[in-house]
Image (cartoon, rainbow, N blue to C red; front, top):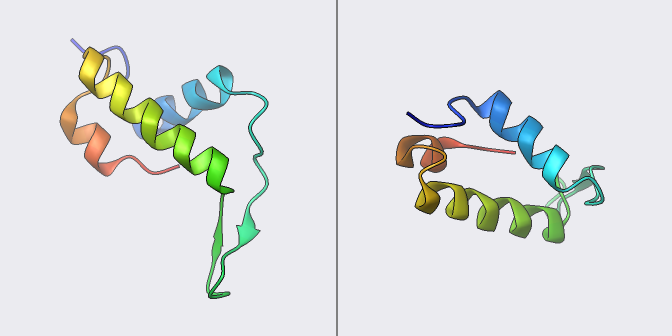
Length: 67
C-alpha cells in the first residue's frame, strides 16, 4: 500500500517538507498564466521522482501529479 494516494495529500506533504520554497506564483514568460518559480518546480519534480522510486506513491500518481 502506498503512503500517499491523492494529489491533495501529495501537495500538503510537499509544502510541509519544503516550507522555505517560494509559494507565490509568477506570470510566466508568455503571459498566459501563472506558475511557480523554477526552484519550486524543480524541487517538486525531483521529490515526486524520489517518492515514486521509493514506493511511497504509485507511478500513476507520479505521472499525473501537478503542483
